[in-house]
Length: 206
Image (cartoon, rainbow, N blue to C red; front, side):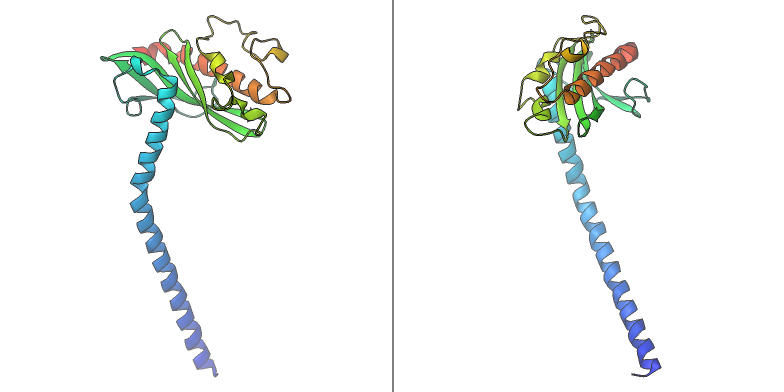
């Protein structure tokens, strides 16, 4: 094969590879466009399913997912903008819910969603994502244990700062046998979420 033939072959292969890459990119783009709406719908369904677990159905007649207010970054939660979902009954705001993340779980972030009534009392908390140890830290899931239900009815007004801790740290909440880090992270973050809500309650409900 002479130099001219070699150059022609290299050029042909380059064009062929570029064509394959272009076709692959086009197919990926089409697939993304076709699945984007489906993914968004599924995410909204998952969010709605979580919200109805922390806000009782009798407290709202609106679409919680679509009735949300963005609250700017807050030091209590240590996150960026927080979306607060408002529950309304006949137009009146009855409760609020928002997501929060404990960054100091045993195996990383613990994502939760919490619902509160107008008085700042917990209506419900659910863990929606975590990587805690099965059989130990995963007891924060309501499907594995009723531990997370102990927050119902609690607030920063009916418990002292000291009581907002696991028993090992002088608080009132149980820790798990062999796993204190996980419940400690959850308790601390829920308390910070309550502080966040108390700070912004007037602007949310007005």
